[in-house]
Amino acid sequence: MAFTLLLLAVTPAYAAEGLAEGIYYQSFGEGKPVLIINGGPGLDSEGFATVAKAVAAQGFQAILFDQRGTGRSPLPVIDKNTVTMDLMVADMEKIRKKLKLKQWTILGHSFGGMLAAHYASQHPEQVEKLIFSSSGGLDLDFVADIQPRINQQLSVKQRTEMAAYQLKQSLGDSSAATNEKRVNILAQAYVLDKSKAPLVAARLKVVNMQLNQLVFADMARIKFDHKQSFANFAKPVLVLQGDQDIISIHTAEKTQRSFPNARLEILKNCAHYGWLDQPEQYYRLLFVFLKA
Image (cartoon, rainbow, N blue to C red):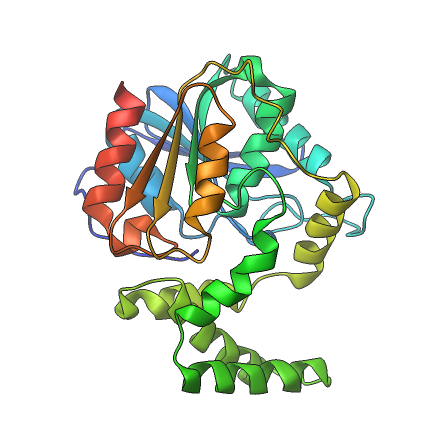
């Protein structure tokens, strides 16, 4: 998501960028590495530099990457054979090896938390710590309740207007104007601080829906469910969740219970973006965990 947040007036020691076999990455600062995975799917890492620079300013190497098919990681062909969870995990490994890192902490936001879990299930030895930030969780159960939770955050008028725009799109209206009107309303559900909603809307309107649908189709194909994958994963895990998130606290609780060494922190008066709604809470909990 493309966000701005004036948090720390500290410039990381350095910023670098590169390609790992076609996957674009950025690195900020020096210290223990922290890979930050943005949500989506179907979005690049644009805007997450705010979070990365805040982490780097605390003495870490913060790494971002554009997921395959997004941003600066284009694919010559986008289909079910080129967009899978396993290939996305392999992309992460390409970055780790390119940067010559033995281990890293992984912070996954929203869908990024689901991808982080898939990576950790295949490469637990490469993970030092895990952070789930308003994550979709370890299975696909969240899909059933996310729309009702979005509706709870919108007024009757907003829900009616959004439904009208969705109907127009389903009938073939692919205009940018209609999509912009829809996402301007939808964005209101993602943050309690409504002054930040335009920042959310700017990202929602550029989601690559082909990629989004291919990723969820692949998760359905592989029966994505990692609730039993981490019984022996003793590394520290932090689960951060807003008390008014579009992802339910029940999802966060299931994630916490699936790890032997996990802590759940509920952010008060917070929706889907902790660093926008409650930056002091969010960063304090994040930094304490990273430094422990």
